Image (cartoon, rainbow, N blue to C red; front, side, top):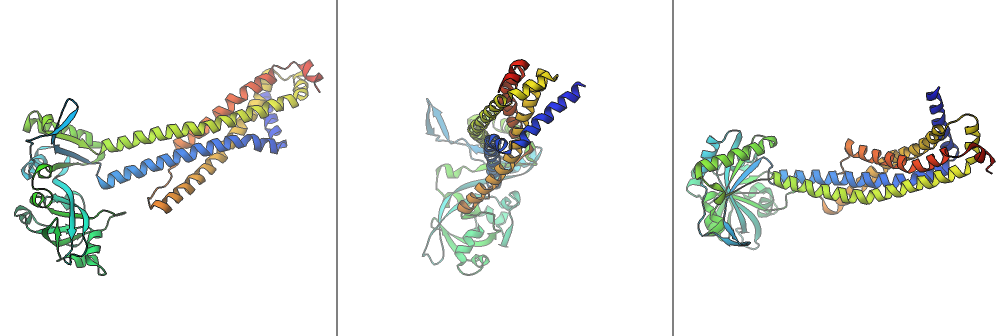
Length: 415
């Protein structure tokens, strides 16, 4: 019998919403705005986080553990260049590949900037020059579109060759196909190099890139200093193994160099991914708090509407109580109205919030060419829905309790 009465109370509450559509819509509006804001902000935040992570993976490779010579000392908070530092060699890279378990390869690379002068010499281009080993393309899973890479023999004798990115090849070739750049002799900071290969195009390629043998670094980049200290890159077999591989690399350095912390810096791109995740978490929390204010305003709107409804229906409440309805039945009736309003507002808000996020991301893609898309996860929908229902219950409790406390006699006399 009690369950039947409870269901009847819920039915009365829902029927009240149906016969007062304008009031229902107006009371739902605040919840819709709050939930839509929350969904738009969280889905855009998740989309930005996924975009940032994909960019880091594309440009740095999160499976990499990098060992860099320590080129500076910090004394009393001030940084000074070291006069002596350890230079990693191809022998170190080969030893690491043999001795460190759980890795798929190693590479030695040194990067810097250079001005690229075409054969005609009319215009110069700024490019990133990577001096590396002959196995670099295989290590980075990079494809060639035309030509070939330099061999170990060419790398060993510092042959005057270079492999250029697709974008640089297109500029060197002019109106012809990028492959036409093969055979041209370009100057990198004044040092002549013959183009022997063109890399396959990469998505969103904007930076010009040149690969040369490692021994070419000193002549092309800088004659002395940091340019003479390449970094050792070690690839883990999977992202999940990166931390374990980093620990093994540190053990390997300790066995090979003793107190390696004074000589090297060991790091991974996972630090950058985690940094992005922390930044996006702060962003989502801050903007989510702003959106939550809209949701609270919606809850206040629900409470005001229900308080007005209690006043208007005082006589009806008195009749129901005189007919045997208990205080909990009246309370349940008004809580059902509050939850129904917040639930409906939550459903509509999710749809509108996603549409808003899609529109915002489309505008960003149109103006910046960044492939940014919103990402709506089940947890985001759950957070928004639970927040809306919690607000509905919280702000519906006072009007429901006020209605439940009404005296039947006083309520019936009320006009």
